[in-house]
Length: 100
Image (cartoon, rainbow, N blue to C red; front, side, top):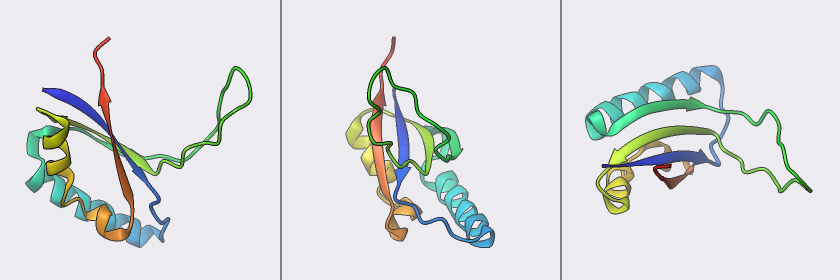
């Protein structure tokens, strides 16, 4: 099985009540759709700073992350196809975690 870093982009920052409802919807969906494939549900993230050896690139707007296990990129995409955040206009990026 391969591991994938799932990052969430362009997520709106709603009120705390909406955040709680969104989180509940995510966990309900993840339990049913992903099961054990969801290695780490992750967390919301906020840009706190940046380091660079030269001029810093424009920071990527990342709203949150998860770690997913799947047999292939195609399977990871299929597993994430019904993600509730997609219905809210967010973008989900899938990055392969390489063994080092």
